[in-house]
Structure formats: C-alpha cells, structure tokens
Length: 557
Image (cartoon, rainbow, N blue to C red):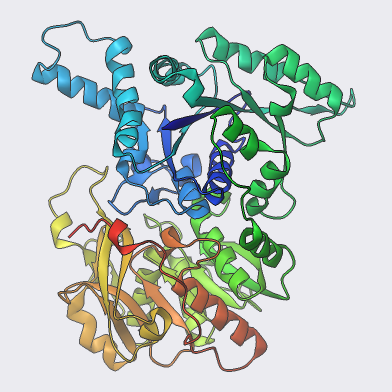
C-alpha cells in the first residue's frame, strides 16, 4: 500500500482538492486502484449544518454522510464510490476520544492529543489500508499549514510515515507563488516559510504544486528547490486553467507529476491513456452550440454553493457538444416579478436549499417556466416550489404552501416527513443517502432513465403531501417516481409541457464528465430543442452509462 498526503500553505482556496482529484485521475488511468480521504480540522462533526456561504455545498455520499465538497471532486474525477469513512473532521475525532474516555476505554490514563487523538487519525487511514482493495490512498488535509487546529493531523501524518516507512509515502504541498506587479517578479518567500512550518512538525514535502499567475522560470524553480529541499523536477507549475477545471489533470501530466509520484513510490505503471479525457475537455472548450441556462437560487454569490449542479450541467452539455452560458439569478430579485430577468433563456433550473428567503422568487420562476413552456429542472426545493406554484395557480389552492415556511398552512401540499416530527437536533437528522425510486411506466421520466427503478441520493426533511395527489393529477401534475411502497413522491412532471421535471433527490451528486446524469442530459436536450424552436428530443437516444456499480451502492432502507 502506498500513501500520498496533500497539504496546503500560504493561503486557503488554492485548490488542494482539485490537485488531489486530478492526480487521482492520472494514477487511475495508469491502472492503479485509487481511493481518497479528506481530513478537515474544523470542530463541526460534519459540514451539514454549515451555511453554504461559508463552506460551499454539502456533498452527500451513498451512505448518507454529509461531507466536504472536495469529495465531490474525488468522485467526479475518478471511479471512486466513497463513504463516511472517507471524511474525518476534528469534531468526529474529539467526539470519539471523549466517548471512549467516558466509557473507561483508556483504563484511567490521562487522555492527551498524543497519542489518543493522533491514534484516531492514524486509525482512519489504516481502515482503508486494511481493506486491501486499493494500491494508493490519497489523503488531503484541509486548512493551511500553521493553523492551530490542523496540528494534530500533521503530527499524526509524521507518526504514520515513521510506522509505514518513508519509501511508501509522498508528501505533496500545494502552495502559492505570488507575482508582485511593482517588482515584476514572482516571490518564493511565502512558499519557503510555509514549508518551514511543515518542517517544524517533522514533515518534509517531496513535491511542490505551485499555484501561480505567471510561468515558473528555471531560476524560480531552482530557488524553490534549494530552499525547500525538493528536487527541481518536483517543483510543479499549476497555472490557473483557462477554461475548465477538467484541464487540470492534463496540465499536471504535462508537468510530469504522475510519473514523478510513481517514481517516488517505486510503482511501475504504463503511461495514462488520456484520449477520452482530452475529447471531453475539447467539447467543453470548443462546443458547436451554446445555451443560456438560468439558475435561480439564494446562494448564487458563492460559486461553490452549487458546485455539483454547475459541473453536472457542464457534463450534460458536453455530451451534446454544447456550451453553457450560466445566468445566475438571485431568487430575491424575482419576488416582485420576473420582469424580463428570465427572457431568452433556454431553460430554468432551481436548486435545493433551506429556509424561506427567496422562495417567492423561485415560485415566480417556476410559474414563468410552466406558462412559457421553458424547460425546467427543479432539484429538491426546486421540486417543492414548482408543486406549490402549480397547486396555487392551476389547482386553485390559494393557501398552498410548505409547512417549512408556514407551519399552519391551510393547504400543506409540502409537509414534514412523519419520521422527522420528533427530531430536534439539526445535524445528520434528515432523510439522507441513497434510496430507490420506482419510475411509472409511460412517463417522460421512464424515457429519460430507460429504467423502471433508479437509485438516487437524498438530503431533505419535507415531502409532497400525497393527500393532494389525485386533485393535482387531474390538472396535469404527474407523480412519475415514488418510493417502492408508493408512499413518497420522488419525481414529478407536467403532462402538457415539453420538459418540466422536479425531483426530491439530488441527481447532481452522481454525474461525471463522460457519464452525465440522465435528468441533466434530458434537460440540456430539451433546452437545445426549445432554443431551436422545435419539438424537444424525446430522450430515447443512447442512455448515459450507470454512474456507479450496483454492488457499490449502500441502500438506506
């Protein structure tokens, strides 16, 4: 078993997750079995209760774990299917240690960061090692070198390297080499000081991935090599990608990173076959068509809040040789009316979310898409606001609402799950993880999926109230997917609309570059058809391959 640890220095948001995912792509294409871990030093048990403005989206895994968005990069860039064992936070570590202490597991010993906290961290790395299904474990350490909360993780890595042998480990440090315009030169001192911070705790990186705006010339590489004690060929330039993050693996391969890592780990592998990856990137960069998609949300000011949705649109559009022009619309700006803000868009997508802010604007956007026959895709809350809008304006249920926004709603078309009624704690208490959906025959959903049962990831508390099913069905509101027992609505569509689909789950968590999710693929096809002013594609063309092997899925019910 070989191990790669990825740390970050100088500043946050340098792209450690993308660097780790891109390296995983290259190693996987060399025939190696790769798995990832993300260690986050924050004290939250998981990011499930964090505001998306602070932390970006919460990425949900098959087993229901609410995790950091970097795990989304890992799953998109490789064939990995991850679980809660692949994400560890300080909150989880200290919770585990304290519970053991309360049970008396430490037999009266004084409980300390070393060895008790570091042992838990090392134990999580060994969990993957002991499975023996992988050749390489890539572990990303969140935060920045020098952060006080990250010290136990770095100390655990130091101990772990001592135990498994340095010949089996590569330390990669992602750092910033800033360009100072006034001096007209790149500065290496921040990287030198960041590496010095790692050395203080006993870690010496063998590879530097240098985020930079300008090319690293020979002199800069030599300087970094000398002062940071790394080989000159291990100073890897990582410029900002020009078009798409999917160029990153190609950039790192051109810099020789994957071959260098294999050499350091004494792994004999063939050159990676990047043909399909290059074709995908070419379709993203130079598409033959363009479509403008409106994303109506409440967190649009932060790119990472809807990261998986934007990536899923990119995957689906590339499959149709199409480029996406995202029109990001703050839902609160639509509360007084659409007023041309959605004019000339090829499709409307409303993502999930929590809380009442912006809901009126989302309802108006859903009405616009319904009345103007604009393709619509509603995800989780996006499905719920479409339901409320239809109930009010088509079925005449003026008091239609969700009990999330009005607990005394006279027509609660969206209501709290029965199992949620006694829940008080917010963390990890929703309906989470992979659940089966039974698709109704003869529906658009059946054409899109090409199957009568699918497995999708969930994260929600509220559901469609089945008491309104027949009344709304009469008006053309079709429940095209349910839980296997028929008790829960999972997928809805409109009878007299080219493509108006809402799902209670989050399909964006299962889309990959060359395997777009069927709902997104169908949505893009419908958008292109709408844009061309012709009948939409019936979605009966070649189906997307399954996103994950069936045997890897972990059902929650």
